[in-house]
Image 1 (tube, rainbow over the protein chains, first blue to last red):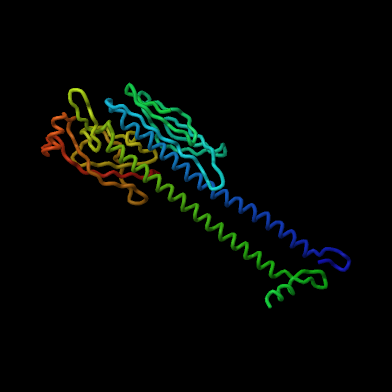
Image 2 (cartoon, rainbow over the protein chains, first blue to last red):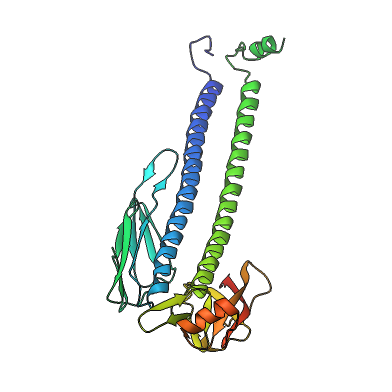
Length: 145
Length: 178
């Protein structure tokens, strides 16, 4: 490894630099791959949350015009969990769609046509994952909170 | 023998140079292995995205079907002097079919046809594409020209004599626009 004069050869330096660069690139790519896989898993669960929440809310509409029943239903919003951690998320509901804000890192919007007749339906515009929604019907109107 | 050979190759020569062919081969193999893993991950992510789209279509379709067959806006009621009950799986004549009432998002198109039931308006009248993913379901639904009295309902259940009530068949198709 050393020359007779105690100098480090150029080849050894190149090998060391190559190893350092290789470890850096390998590490970066591995992190990116893990991030991509985690992101995919999170998006899968986000979609599942939004679709199931949408199903719950939309199906409330089916009983709006039935004025003769006492009605109450509950739904617990699922949480986002991947193998290594639990991911906090917030859900905003507007008249036109659902928006999931995951851990403030990124926002995913779903335009699932949350059109709900305001005269017959009131719902909180903000929920967090893991929260339970309770819908009750009174005076011909459904209130979810 | 091989190990001994490798040790010999790693020796430094008289000019201080390392013979690192084995190391380079090993690194090349590691790089190829990593590229392979990266490619597999990419394929899995692509597959996952495709499956998510199909799953979303299926769930939108199932929800629309549920909304169609259990909708108090479209369906028939049974009433007596005091009470009024909704009959799931029924539909009146001359209703207004809207995508919103079927919980179909704006970026999806739909086609709904039911033999023997006429609609006043029908937003689900798009032309079904010949390619791409389509959610399709055939179903039977009970058509009642007007709401029923309790007596008429009981007679229908007991004797099978059901004036103004017919069973019709229909098809609902939903697909993603664009």
